[in-house]
Image (cartoon, rainbow, N blue to C red; front, side, top):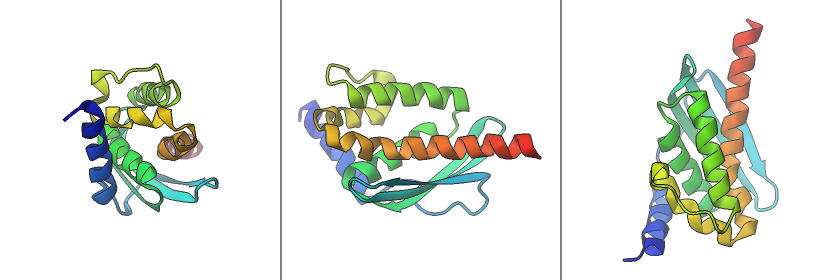
Length: 147
């Protein structure tokens, strides 16, 4: 099995059986995301412990890339703090938008998204969850500063 087959299998698995799928009733913040180009929609909920994501869940309907990316993202960011999540997002964004970029071992299963860069129209599908997570984290910061 070559690397592309392995990556494809990871994407298919996370699309068929998304991890952390479902609403999070005791969330500190949530955000909704929509990709009008292909109709992907999702909601991301986060529960924080200080600056660290204690729990994260998502719900939505979308293409295989969108669903798999959200599932992979929730696994990757759980337990990380906001600074680590921002750095991880930058790595993933580079991987998705630069065909010459290679998947760093530190990305773990997120490396399965490497092939998306070959299909520029699908980059928005893969990044929708990240933008939605950032919006939720921004809202959590606003909630803390306005209390």
